[in-house]
Image 1 (cartoon, rainbow, N blue to C red):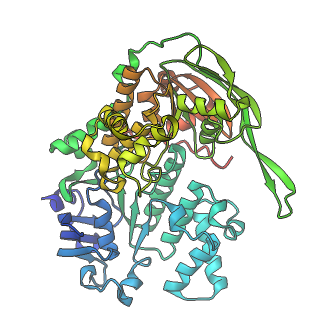
Image 2: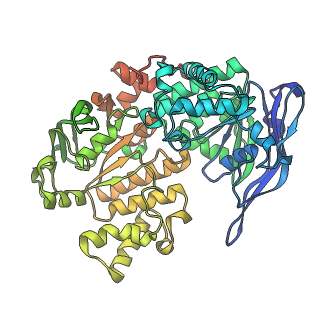
Image 3: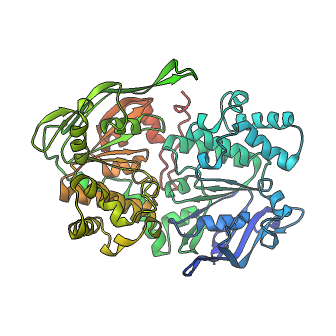
Length: 576
């Protein structure tokens, strides 16, 4: 039984038990059918313990956590189960409480706190960070604004935000991704909860920020004796921080136990496949390792490329400028996969968009050699020449749902470049779209459906099909796999490698996941504060980095083996 296997290494003393979930089932009543989102899920969580709930998107992880918080939407129905919050004095059966009652509102935030995946959408953009945290404190503990702000400052200091009194007066948009997540943690810890639920808390963060956030969470957990329920699909992260693991698939818990047992002796085929996908990304793809570059002459040659953003006051006068990218120089060869890695804010995306002239560079040049061997400076192209260039060099975005118009069918989305650039229509358009869908492993029957009907991995395949529509020579993939589960990520990377072999593509691959870059890329550029600090062979960079910053970046990558946890490099490159 999952409950027993997930808790057998812990004492059964009732006083140590923090949360128990027994045979929880949740259905969604949709317009056309009933979706069984969670079926007979049971597990226990103890004080001081970290339990990782893992599985692919749609496995029921987040529905389970929202059931615990009593935050299910109107379409959801809990059909069975019991969720109990335990304490030394008394136990509270959460499933007996009305989700809109005062009783559950007193528990949310105070005894059970939740850290959301995306802090930008979870924090108010029109209130200061300090006022939002102070509001949570006053809601549960009362007191004056002054005392609440004093407590807020102490919390921001505990989560290692520098100059906490000053930062409390700033707004969400003035914080980096890592700082926003730290503010979310401060808010979650404001009332010293017994149970902390972290729902994909580091998915959108780069590896060094991720390492710092998880290191911070573990230290705060130890100092406060909290129980931590970690929801994630990152098995490397699970290996680093979890005591116990519960694996979910199709709404059910299929396997559970101590982290070492799950990683080294998984019993179910599904757990084995998840671990195999993770380990596969820890080494170069065989197809990449054996590939020879097609040509000695670069097709893209970037020289001294730079971008400065001016900061102006309300009168339009420039106060100062920030160098987002400075002096970037590199070459991309035919048939090559070139990775660009670095933390958030390092200039990776700005660099990629300058190459496409989506962002106008303030210095340097981009030389492009077309299929006829003619060289031209992209930074000086007129609109007509730039349109031709954009047929050869295409972009794949990070979030496949946000980049696909929800009001357009898959046929309209994939076929749009063909209609706009080639005037294609009718049977010819249908045939070409069907051909593109087949190329990325999708059925022709998908053409008349809409993006919401597909999974994240399927949506990204449609994004790839759209990028391939005009037979490009170069694909710029901007974090194209970071929003995907590890097994889907491996599938998409293998698809891109296969397409490269068949179509002769070159990739400029922007990522913060070192394992993905190692698997997919031939060479790597490492960016820090807008500059390229190191570049070279992907395997050499990943195994023997020379620059101190690259060493810090590599050391922050979680090792997907609980027996070989990495030592977190305490050097704070992010705040330097």
